[in-house]
Length: 269
Ligand SMILES: CC(C)(COP(=O)(O)OP(=O)(O)OC[C@H]1O[C@@H](n2cnc3c(N)ncnc32)[C@H](O)[C@@H]1OP(=O)(O)O)[C@@H](O)C(=O)NCCC(=O)NCCS
Image 1 (tube, rainbow, N blue to C red):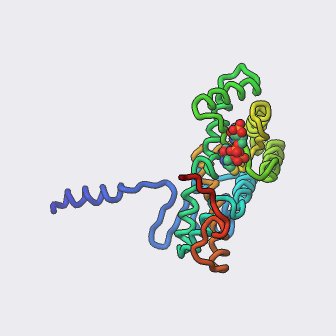
Image 2 (cartoon, rainbow, N blue to C red):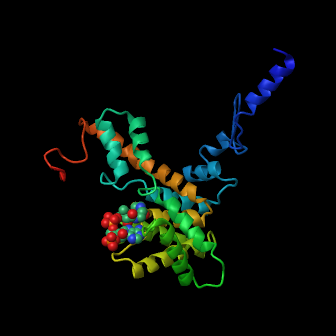
Image 3 (cartoon, protein in one colour):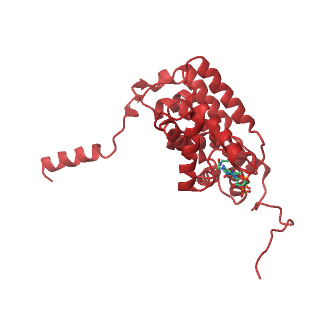
């Protein structure tokens, strides 16, 4: 092979992956320009998540708000499909990685991933042409949204909680952060206005749920909608891991979603 061709191939190989995230050389690991040893022991996990996924560093107050959202969604018990799947996978013999991957797979549009759609909805309201009041803007955007996607509004409604205690606490933290000038409070206003509009429209009570509340936090902190889903998965992975590990300690083989002596409903011939 000619020298020119070899040089060209080497250049092509080096340029195959490009990243601004990490620079690794023998004895050197720099994340976004900062040596890893200066980050270890000095920044929180939430700060690290921000540093890795954004182009800037968070202030301590921003990192604290992000951390609160990450803490809030870690677990919702074995009736949450992601947690049940994690436990069932372990009883089918899967190791922790398989159990976690199986569980994370269901964190899509309906369960856990709704924060992404919810933040998209909030952004639509935030970017709506000026001139309308907040209430009229919310009404107009909800009408558009329902026409496009059907009547279910992501980030609202809950099977168990008439009021979601996680949403109340997160919104209180956003309010406090807004008072300190850490965030604007615009997404909290939008989230509450959507909740009020749904109370007028829907047949049942539709409280802001965890996906709605974390969408408020992520919107306030300037994350893109797709990241709301990724961050929810990061958070819920802690619960998925904990339940997989607990099930491993408990043992049990091939546990289905219900005890076998409780029948399901057969509706066929
Ligand atoms: C979370 C959720 C599945 C809970 O559902 P549920 O309490 O079992 O409620 P149901 O699906 O039985 O619906 C009850 C009624 O409320 C309505 N409803 C429920 N959630 C709604 C929502 N987010 N927006 C509008 N209407 C909603 C249903 O259409 C239904 O109305 P109907 O009786 O007139 O047909 C549901 O609220 C939902 O899909 N929310 C949006 C997705 C979301 O945020 N997921 C994250 C959950 S933490």
